[in-house]
Length: 247
Ligand code: 13P
Image (cartoon, rainbow, N blue to C red):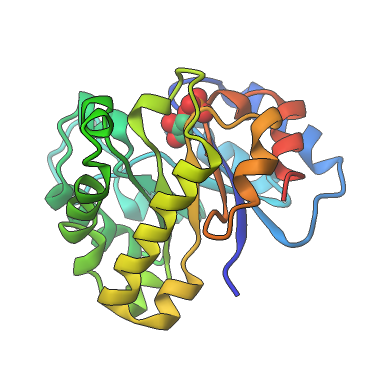
């Protein structure tokens, strides 16, 4: 059965000492055993947090698609693997928007991450003007067709999908539970058509976009929503704990 997942994405916030205090606070609590807890932290904090992260798995927020070489300022999948990073968030809308990442590039990154035995949290989601025209289903379908649909069934065992409508990220405006459910069902249908029943049933699909303690329970209660990828509300231990306990 697919997993319930509460994942945080700290983006370009926090330093190592914040991270150390945070994971200590979370680990002091008895976490529900049926929820996988992940936090995407800045690159610089990964090596320092993995040894103390306890029940939390540490994710990177990006990585380069090449194995190594003259790519000044970049971080490779093998570097992440060497510090025991378990997950890499790829295709976040902020990377697509500010760093011009395409689905083709994201696919190359996914291959590289999985070659090194790590799992991928693949993000998709439509901008506001697409939602206003009610073309979100086709938009997200095209994102998937150009990326995860080109993976193998075996590779899909290492992929978590996060549906993050761009208009709901950091805006305080959440997709309604029904809007989330409808897109998640659509995504699961694409998985069914592309990979078959098993992959469709086993792939966790997370919702992201202004998830907070006040709305997590209702969103997570939807049949095809398996948890959340949480930005702002994952920066406070208390609110992230509430979200972890919202299943
Ligand atoms: P917020 O929860 O701050 O809206 O961010 C969502 C997000 O982008 C997670 O990756």
